Amino acid sequence: MTISDADLSELYMRYAPILHARARGILGDDAEAGDAVQETFARVIRAGERFRNESSPLTWMYQINTNWCLNRLRDRKGHQRKHDERRAEIMPRGEEPELDVSRLDDHRIRDLLVEEEAETQRIVIALFFDDMTREEAAVAVGISVPTLRKRLDAFLRRARRSLGVVVASAVVVWFAWSALGGGQ
Image 1: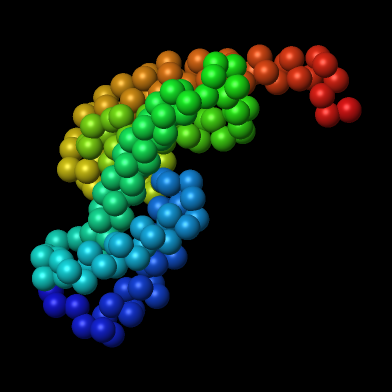
Image 2 (image 1 turned 120 degrees about the horizontal axis):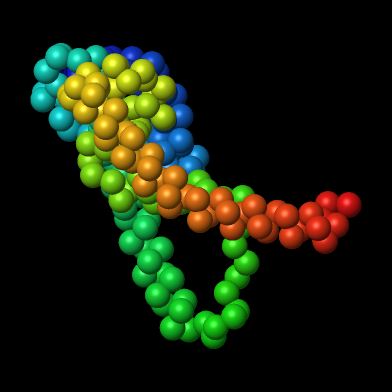
């Protein structure tokens, strides 16, 4: 399908806010979400002739947007690892900056998603970011509902196991802070 300027304008007016909200949910950053929307539409312009009308334009753009966001998360994780390695070489032990506990879970959840295989990523995004039912997500991903359920259960077990350490640490910090009269 060739996309005219009028078609592109209509697509942008109709879907840009939806794609922005979705990207913000995945990336956790408003500015990066804006970049994701711009890149999504740039790719729509470049690949418009490959759209086969087998799904809605929004479904197609969701896939483009999701792939860009997941690649951005992977890049961010690689940059953070390099930054941490450099900081560890420079900074003496015990002088690390304090951790922002309120953002820990969001970062960890995104890290968990990046570590998953592509199909599991699509399942989690469809269910948790797009608010699809399991049946809708199975159709969108192209698998059966039992397979989706099995992959989702495995992901949730891994996530709970991994986040359990983070949550337990946050609870200990909160109790210690409360016991010391925090917030009074």
